[in-house]
Amino acid sequence: MEITRLFDFLTHQLENNPLPDALVSKTSGAWVKTSTQEYQDQANQISRGLLRMGIKPGDHIALITTTNRTEWNIMDIGLQQIGVISVPVYPSISPEEYEYIFNQAKISFSFVSDKELYEKMMKTKPNTPDLVGVYTFDEVADAPNWKEILDMGEDDSNQGEVDAIKDSIKNDDVVTIIYTSGTTGKPKGVVLSHNNIVSNVLASKERVPDMGDNARAMSFLPICHVFERMLIYLYQYNAIPIYYAESIESIGDNLKELKPTVMTVVPRLVEKVYAKIYDTGSNAGGIKTKLFMWALDLVKDFTPYKEMPFMWKLKYKFASATVFKKWREGVGGNMVCMVSGSAKLSPRLNRLFWAAGIPIIEGYGLTETSPVISVNSMDPKGFAIGSVGSALDKVDIRIAEDGEIQVKGPNVFQEYYQQPEKTAEVFTEDGYFMTGDIGEIKDGLLFITDRKKQIFKTSGGKYVAPQIIENAMKAIPFIEQIMVVGEGQKMPCAIIQPNFDYVREFIKRNDLPFDNPSNEEIANAPSLKSLIEEQIKVVNRQFGKWEQVKKFELTPDVWTIEDGLLTPTLKHKRKNIQEKYQDLYDKMYDETY
Image (cartoon, rainbow, N blue to C red; front, side, top):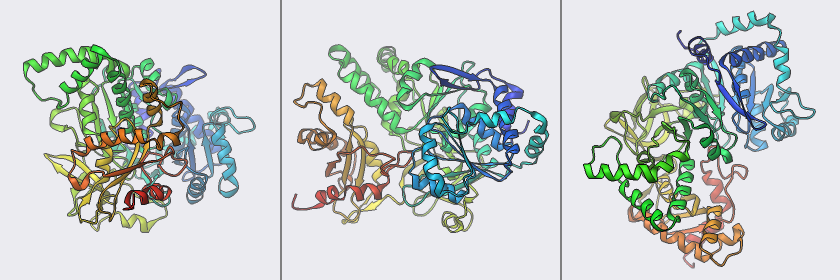
């Protein structure tokens, strides 16, 4: 069958390779499997039930979940089949952002995962006049439950109406509005059609390696983000069972329990995994630490697919069987590849994980491009450490005179919802979408340099790309978050949030004279600042003198989404961070200090 609409992926799986475990979530301590047939049947029930409630094609319904779960997918297909436009929303945004999105999109109903979100919605409801009702997936006292819609759809006498609407849906019809978690200003509603996402799934499929007969995907990145959502459709197309991690805290246990072959990651997770590995290996003591350090040194220049000398291969075989075997076991032992997106991955870490036998395929894209523009493959000709691969089929990439990456293709969004001026601002006269990112193409592969709007010029006239410096500095285990500043100043400096948990472990392990210090005590400890300073000096060596971080200050707070310092995809809200820590900024640039 030809796939032109998103719900066709489920039909394709049902007709060609139905699974007993199409979707799997943990409920009350047990993994609950939903087969392909059950998935389709329940989606039909939702469609029938919603029609009986008076929902019409073109209505807007919000889906919000704290963690990924089966019910979200069933709702997603149930909405699509009757032409309802889904508006997935992050669970962690502020009440003001909820109000803005719900009012701008005229949300009529919202389906939320749990009691906390239900209460959040009910506080927002008086200020969102279009919102008729809120349903929950969990059983919540006095709250309408999504099972009521399922029950309303038990009677299949109106299935003909569902089928008629389904048949009338075209590939260029709007399927979803995804609000970007922008680092500045109010969220913008990215309007995507079936074809936008379908074309991206079909083109991305060519870059994903064969997972074998025992393929299994583990999903934990927010499904409201188009990156994870697109890959969920891709897994369905490839008939790969999808297991949802219980929470971000349980990922380690879930990996060992589920032994997945594929999962999506963001660079910050890779950094945290490596920091834990390094901490364990470097503090094992004796021969174990020496062996660990020897293995890291052996592969520091590792390049996938490059032919190496015979003696190196022998050493590597030993390192793989001793040191790197434990890395592979830590991610379940069956990982064929991880797919990384959302931000730039450190080339050094990518190299190390490939050497350990855990390939990471790095890609690039935006919500506005559904999301993938380019991605590496596991083919030697389509891969390079540090690159984000070549353009997907039918996607055209060009580099503007100022270095900006511009894109045209079937994956590019239709508009920002009800914001024609904002839409016009991001397209060239000849129809290319301006990504706002700076990059270059070498041997057909795209390399990202920085965000166009984040590059700044020092008072000496030198340009600085902060993200490159930040990514390098995050390899320092004492650093959890870092923002490089210096617009119009004589030198770059940095505002840093320490990795408080790591610092406390370090203090305990080294018997330092601190008794369970508070975050504020850690941020104000001269000894910690000296430790970080020494490591920053080492990282600085890879940059030009004008790019090196000369001063830094530590914040006593954890940077969070709730405090408005991070976006839901964990990007820095730079303006907010600088405003909150203006005193630290002034201190770094005050000549009297």
